[in-house]
Image (cartoon, rainbow, N blue to C red; front, side):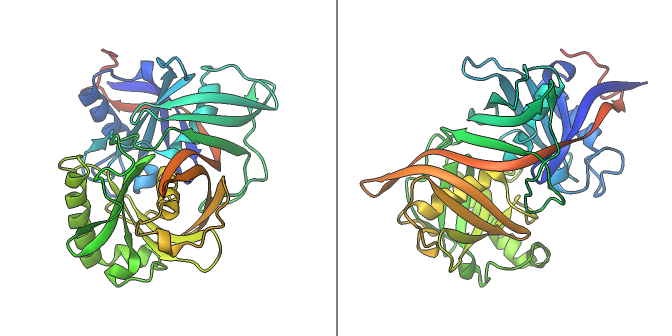
Length: 364
């Protein structure tokens, strides 16, 4: 016998995956992991026995429910399922998948709909971050068609506006988890920063790279990945995150200069492959790093000095714009909020089936 689990299949930003309701999946975290591994088909490079897409941006899972937080309407639990290693990581959150949480919550009947948009307050359970999203709606339905285009996704769709609040230190408890603007690890200067996503950020040139390499070029540079992973794991310890060999956090990024005002070139790692575009959470951290005096990224971006500021991050498939509200006080960067516009689309709805021997449907 197989166990059927209702789900929506959604694209959020440049990621996609199944969206479940919390009430429909196991409450026990270990059992939940077994269910998600089976649903996605983790353990095969093509996820041939599941609905994953053979890439870390297509093996993501969102679990939504009415919020237990007085501030929020919806709780969003994110799970990063490994493509090949039968692992599930609940430490990070994902801003791209979060783009589709509002539309999914409406589709699931968890929030009331208004027009011309529905505003939804979302708590990212993994990090505790608060996010306000505006979803285009009419006649009790989500509007998916529109003219907004984001790099890394073909075509256009309706915009989903997101404002991230109180994300500085959301994972580690500190904006600069090591207490330093720059740390030297294995001869490489890095900035360890936690804004929406704990990250280790380094200059591309310090690895002998331009920062303009394609994702494919970087993925074949195994010597770079081996050194990067050593630095990432050493930095994780200094950031108070412990042994992160089996965790996708902290994430790693390379930065390089761009001659245009408020522009910077970035390459983001997830972390064992190059991200084809850029994570929404990581984009906020990178923008903050570029605006903070004394970091590895600060000298690489010519800032207009505006507040809020529109920072354009150049990734392998285009650009991502991050609207950062901040202030500099006594030469210290203080983050207030970050805004982004992404798109989402419902791809499918129905039931996903997993072997009954993995889970018999008992939600306990």
